[in-house]
Amino acid sequence: QVQLVESGGGLVQAGGSLRLSCAVSGTIFTITDMGWYRQTPGNKRELVAIITKLGSTNYADSVKGRFTIARNNAKDTVYLQMNSLKPDDTAVYYCNVIRSGNPIDGFWGQGTQVIVSS
Image 1 (spheres, rainbow, N blue to C red):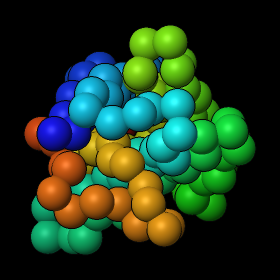
Image 2: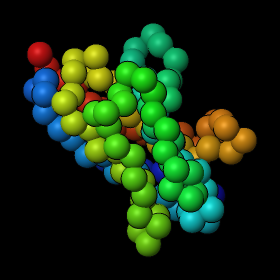
Image 3: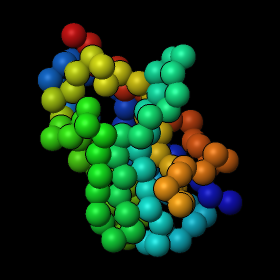
Image 4: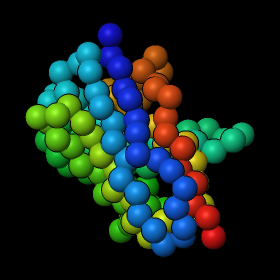
């Protein structure tokens, strides 16, 4: 059974930084593409960043140049370094496994709340 546990969220002032972590268990992490998503009340989850099993990355236009996704295969963990945070980045952040380009509905964790104050 796959488990995804996000952590590292919090309250930060605009311009600040946070690093989110996602611990993954129950799957072979090294051959798994991973993504970070975020969701605000009343809206659908949106993709923030992807990292493939080979380490290739891709980002939403809204976070390019500010966020960095990385993975540590030895620790089965994926990270999201968020710099130059803006109030619009306020959301609950989730990680998920990506298969055939999509997240797996049954794998969503509890997420971690990020609040950016202006």
